[in-house]
Image (cartoon, rainbow, N blue to C red; front, side):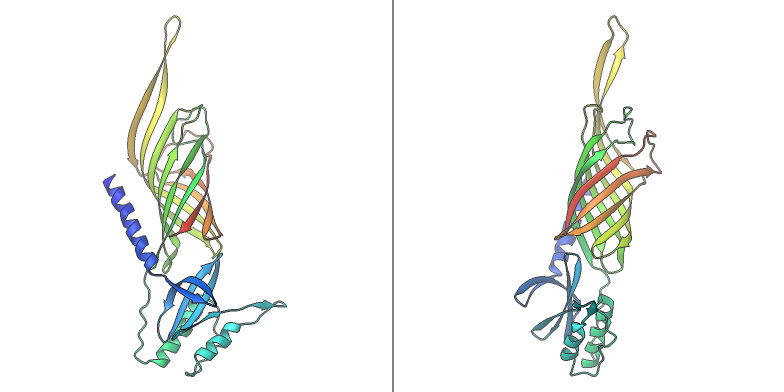
Length: 294
């Protein structure tokens, strides 16, 4: 438990550092928390609003949004004219610049190098981001006895760690999940687990991922009723509790959909396990929740 608490505290400290990486700017009367992608004579700033990327160009104290509006089915590419005006003091073409982060990154770097021969870009090697959320759902706890295949309510909290630079499709998740006993199955459990997610679909608005639970610490409690043959028969109920640390290697799937400042998240958990025995029932473990970026 001490090691789990230490990791949790580390997550919070890293999250605080991530928050400090953003800075507030006011553009056309609107305040944004913007990330710095390229810093120099011409600085590239960006953020996401409702799942859409927004880009800004800063020169001295002047900040302009880079826009590409659509009229009558055609994109107007206003951002090229904005960049042309801001870089008029250097011979550099905007014709092939696309309104994407990689293309803008290259253009801004080229301009800064031509403007200042001593310009040396410090490339970001890591950009840790965190998402915190809660969830609730139902499960038939197939990795326990659950002879009657009873459904049980579950709820919990996720802390998701993402590197937005080199490992955009990968994430680590620290999860707390509480399984509540039902009227048909007197079993409850509190589980802390570490999970790895691979996002095989990733867009600004939607992610779909494969989840692997590779380590879990579980505290469980259940009631067992014994029948003692007598006249009449006697039934005795015992409460058994304990803890277990395991490497279950269970797999599930899920999806995140951008809504407002966070994500609606759906998970089909623990569909199959490689290092844990099931009760051979069809897995039912669905959760729905909401998480937001720290």
